[in-house]
Each structure stands twice: as structure tokens, then as C-alpha cells.
Image 1 (tube, one colour):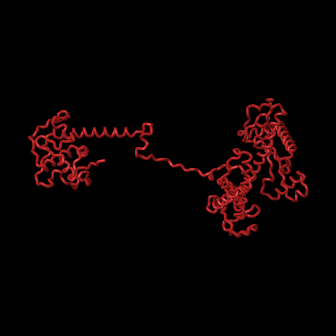
Image 2 (image 1 turned 30 degrees about the horizontal axis):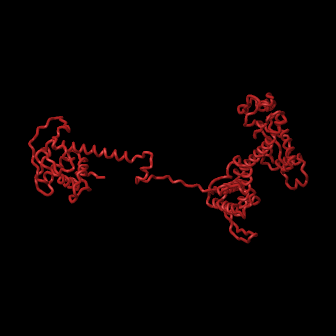
Image 3 (image 1 turned 45 degrees about the horizontal axis):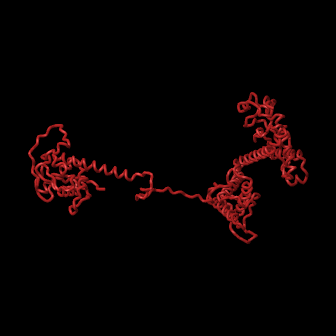
Length: 503
């Protein structure tokens, strides 16, 4: 695109005297000039050509606007004809080449140089005010026409390049920027390390198998076991000898006082996942029960991260008094909730069988986790003597044998929620009997820890709203009514179908 230059102080040109004058290009450049600049350029060209004759003075009328129609017809199409090489302005002729040369001289002139100063001829400057107003109007009219033609050409070009929906203008020389998409590797996707309710039975079993393999591999890499104390940050890492293949190697040092994203911890996670993934994707070495279940290395990294987090919690419990106490309490609470969830699942498994016996009364709505009986393995106290005395009571109530006592068999104490009515307790007991019967008929046996009931109960109301028939009236009157617990206690408006007041 031709670049216009100001008349003063410009340093770049687009036309040189040695080149042939391009009429359209010259007119475009002239169109970028102001009336004052154009008037000075015409005067300068006339001086260089020696054709300037000062016209007789013309009286100027104030506030008079000259229209394009006032320009003589003979001078109107001179600049736009494309063939005329000169133009007469009321008594002197200005050649287009002289105008271009004057424009070039003005473009390269240093700042402060007057356009009227002679370049090759020492002639006195001519007062621009002597020029007739009609001469300037003629040039400005032609410039206005050229600008209109230029805008028309621009509009035509833009409309021609618009996409009309077909493939004719797809290869118009312009490359459209395409968005780059990054393909996700199959090894980075999570298949088994998701919520278990999204997995089928085979996937759950494979998940447990892989989790155990990753844990054993991390124990081999670090030398950490459940029976030994966890190493501290400054504990030296001993060399490890694998007697099966006489492989003597240095164990990897974990930083359990830091986050799992620490470089050393991350290295253990990545290495364990890599080894298990290579082994279990090899057809000859694969030991998984379900050969067709898919998994990724990202799943194994998630399992390894979970193992390292459990080590970190255990380390904090062993080395930080306050954190250790809180960690132990949280671990006990988690175990209690897990036992409640297990009890709920066992009762849900025979809910349909109960409904068949009781004319379609489905007890599933009565099986919330928070409504289940708690089962604890020890007394919540920091007094070791009191805790041991309570354990002896549980051992006697469970009637353990001498052999079971010597083996350290754990006894779970049942703590019944005091809010439950006799009707609800009867429903739960019947569900437990149906579960034991179903297990006996299937021939399957499960290792079950002995239970003991020392009469302890839980007074606090559950977080989940209760049905009216589930509430024991004596519990509400003795422990809830008139206390702060009453504000958080909610009862549903009516009993479920088949129970309580809605048989």
C-alpha cells in the first residue's frame, strides 16, 4: 500500500524522479494532503517549471463555499483522464511530473525547510494567497472523486473475499489457524481409580488386587512394613538384598514429613506404578483373576498415592502428640462408620426377602447408616488401666476361650442407639436372622469377630430425620425435650407404608 508522507519532516518516499509517473498512484498520494499542503506543492511545481504567472487578484467574498459545479468543465477531468500530462490553473500550466518531483523534494526535506524555497533555481517565493480559489477547488474536487473510487474498490475487494458457504474460495491464499488438540494418552486415563459405585464386580475385584500389588511393591522399594516403625526424615536408608535373585540395591527414601508431591515421594509413586503396570500388562507375567478388565497406569499411581498418604498419617500419629491423638480418634471413628455401613449392606441384601414375608412391606427406607448399631473395639479414654479393665469385661461377655485370648482376638462392643423403639429393634433383628439363614444355605462362611453387649447406649439423636414410629417416647422425654438437642431433632410427618401407623 502506498504510504503518504507529510510535506515537512518526512524521511521516506515512494516515487523517485527516475521512475515513470504512475497517474493513479500520484493521485492517491495527492489525496492524502491537506488543502494548504496541496496549494504549496502546486506553487513549488510552477516555480520549478518556470510557468507560473500570477493571476489578477480576485476579491474574496466572506463565508462563500465553492461547489464542485463551479469548476470549469474543461479543467474538471484533467487529473482523472489518465492520459493528460499537464493541467492549466488560470494562467499557468503545472506538469504532473513536476508535481511529483516537488512532492519528492518536500518528502525528503529536513524539518523546518520551507516548501516555497527554490531547490535548483534561485527565484523569489510566490505568495500562495495570489493563487485563485478555483484552482484549489478543482484539485480538491478531483481528490474527493479519487477517494470515492478508492473506497469503492476496497468494498468490492472485501465482498469478493467473503465466505459464501461453498468451497470456491477455500484456497484463497489465507491459512486459517487451526486449534491444536492434545490427544490424551490411554495411560493417563482413570478407569478403576474412581468411585466404587461406578464399577462392576469384576472391576472392584481387579481394583483390590492391583491396590495390594502396588502396596507390596512400595514396601519392597522403601523397606516400610506395617509392623516396623516408619523411618524419620534423617533416618539412613539401608541397602536391601533380595534373596530370591541376589539383587543388592539401595532402598528409596521417602519423605513422610512432607507432602506426597515431594520429589522423593513422587519418585516412589511413579516407580511402583510403572513396575506393576509393566508386569500386569505382560501376558506371561499377569496374575490378575480377570484378564479382560482394563486399567491404566494412572490408576496405579492413584493407588500408590493413597498408600503413601496412609503412611504419612501414620507417621504424624507416631511423631506428633496432638496430631497423633486426633489421627487415632479419626481412625476409630472411620472404623465405626465402616462397621455401620457393613451392617446396613447386610440387612439391605435380605430386604426383598423380608418384603415377601410381610406382604410387600419394604424395610429399605429404615436402613440409614446413622441408625445402625455402633461396634467399638475399645473404650474412648486415655487411661490405660481403665481401658484394660473394660477390655477384660468384653472378653468375659463374649466368652472367649484361652486360645482366643492368647491370640489377641478382638472383641467388638455393641452400642445401641437409645432413640430406637422396640418395633424398629424387632425389624432389625429379623433382618439379621434372615441374613444368617441365607449365608448358611449358600454354604459360605466369613470370619466374624465376636460381639459383646455391656448395656452401653448412645443418647444423641441421629442426623437423619426419623419416622414417628421409630422414636422411643421415654428417650425423647428424658433426654431431648427441653434441652438444646430438641432444636436439631426432626421427625418426618408420617410413617412409611407397611410400618407404624401406616400398615
